[in-house]
Amino acid sequence: MAEDDGPDAGYIAGRVLFADGRAVAGADVKAIGTDAVTSTSGDGAFLLDVKPGVHRLVAQLGGAAGAMATGVTVARGQTADGVVIRLSLAASFVGVVSADDGSRVAGAQVAARLSAGGLRMREDLWGRIVAMAVADAEGAFAIAPLAPGIYSVEASAPGFMDGAEFRLALEAGQRLEVPLKLKRLGAIEGVVKDEQGVAIDGAVVSTWDWRGQRLEARSSADGHYRIDGVRPDRITVAGGHADALGHIDRRVDVTPGSTAHADFTLPVTGQLAGIVTLPSGAPASSVRVEFYSRARADRAGEVTTDADGHYRAKLLPGVYEVTASRDAMRRPSGALFARGPPRG
Image (cartoon, rainbow, N blue to C red; front, side, top):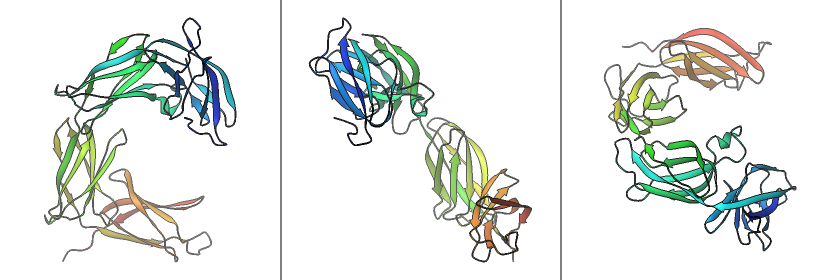
């Protein structure tokens, strides 16, 4: 089966041989990380259709397996020829997937990854998936048959962070044991109220961490919210009104399998309005107006000017830097203060 046999396809041609040089007929040849697969003919030859890019091939027949030493670059409509894959005794990874508390993780997905073209490629930071297995009721797994090479092995399961071992050298015929440990995900919950202690329905609460994970939830009628699936770490949690820009944030420590608490008291919002004009004095429509909070040292949000150049933003009280931009033009307007409405 070809991955792509259209006009944009490229081709890889070569032969599969045993270690003693004999041709291997009927071997499966696959480009790792893709659906491209074919079989060798009686003289060990193969022709594989692939998408343009960097590819690395693996071959397997019975208990023998082999892989190209490195990747090959394939251009559209061209053939990368002369590839030779030598088979040797297949190897395997075996092990147990366990949780941070020592319990076994049944049903975990375990993948063996092999680099296609070197770590300079973003997609090969961990490698492309060559083979997968599912951990049994005791968390045990076996991935076979595999060609010799340098692999990463990763495990994943619902409710857990992914776990991985990198740079594992697998030799011909080796049965390499790789224990994998997974940390349980945590949760954050709390209550969002206003300054009078009244629960806020529909408040937006979000999290982010240094890895870039961002999760979001909205408070219910009683002000309660809960965010599940949070990676154990020091997490920043932000709470804000659903109809206003800006937020209040705090940091909490989430440990594996725990629930951290973060309550929010949101102040009454205020309005910040103005007009944006062009150098000629004409109103500037469809201009992006951005608000940067000095107190929080982060971006609060943005609005767009109307046909007359007017903008209006609902903001949490505080000092903001306001910037207007459209295409190549960018004009800061300095620091402005948004004050909440008077209370009666």
